Amino acid sequence: MESSGARDYFVDLQTRIVARLEALDGTGFGRDVWERKGGGGVTCIIEQGQVFERGGVNFSHVRGGELPASATAARPQLAGRAFEVMGVSVVLHPRNPYVPTVHMNVRLFVALPRVLGVGITAGNSGARREAEEVATRQYQDVRRGAADEGDKVAAPDFRPIWWFGGGMDLTPYYGFEEDATHFHRSCRDALSPFGADYHLRYKRWCDEYFFLRHRGEPRGIGGIFFDDLCESGFEHCFALTRSVGDHFLPAYEPILGRRKDMPYGERERDFQAYRRGRYVEFNLVYDRGTLFGLQSNGRAEAILMSLPPLAKWRYDWRPAPGSPEARLYTDFLTARDWLKA
Image (cartoon, rainbow, N blue to C red; front, side, top):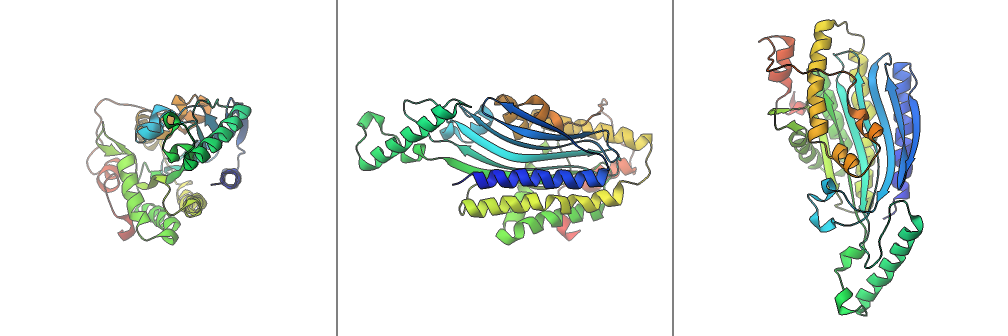
C-alpha cells in the first residue's frame, strides 16, 4: 500500500473543485494553510459570496498516536493503534433557498502497525520511523518463530490496516424531481464501472447514515455513502474513491445552474434557516467525521466549516398542508428510488 498517490490525488481534487466553484460564484475562496503536531492541511473557504453564503473545500493529512473512540467503536481490535488519515471534504451552503446544500467527502484511513515496546508519537517522524523499523523486525521474527513466546502477537498487528470512505449527498429545501434524479444518476454513474451492486448498497447506506434518529427524518434526499472499503485490493478501492470525487461537480453543477437565479423572498429564506437547523443537529450529534476530528484534537475551524452561517429552531413547528414546504416532507424526505422517477 502506497499512500503518496492518494495524497497527490486529494490535493489535485481540492484544487480543481475550488477553481470551478470560484468561476461559478465570481468570488475567490480564502486559503488557510495550517499545521499542527502530526500533520496539517489547507482550508479553502468562501463566505458571503454571490452564490454561496458559506462553503468550504478542505484537504487534511494528519497522524496521531492513538485512534480516538469514534474510529474504534466498530473496530475494537484497532484500539491503541497510531493512525494516518487524509482526504477532501466539501460542504456548500448556497444563498438561494431553491439551491440545495451539498456535501462530498473522500478519504483514506490507515491504522498503523502495532509495535511492541515502542510508542509512536504523533508528529515525531524519528520515533515513527524507529517504530516502523522495529515492527518490521518483530514481524520477521514472528514469521521465523524466533520471537520470545511472550512477545508473539498475531501477524496482522504488524501490518497497516487501510480503508477508504466517502460519498456525496444532497439536502434540498424546496424539492425538484429533476434535480433529485440527476444527482442520484450521477452517483450511480460514479460506481457502475466497479460492480453492479455498489450503487444499491451505498445508496441504502447513505439513507441509513444521514438519518436524524431523534427527529425520525432524513437530513436530505441522500446519495451514496461508504466506509471500511478495502475489498478487491488497494488499487480497486482507490479507483472507486477517485471516481466518486471526480463525479461531484457533474452531479451538482447542473442543479446549481438551474436554481441559483430563481426569485425568492423572506418566506423561503426563513424555511431554509429552519431546515438548516436539522443540518446542524446531524453534524454535531451523529457525523463521524466531525466527531473524529474533535476527538483527535483536530482543527476546530476546519472541522466546523460544515455548519451553515445562519440557522433557526422553532418549537414543534409544522408546515401548512399542501404548501411547498410540506411537499419537501411528503415527496422528498422519504425513501425513494430516484432512478425510476
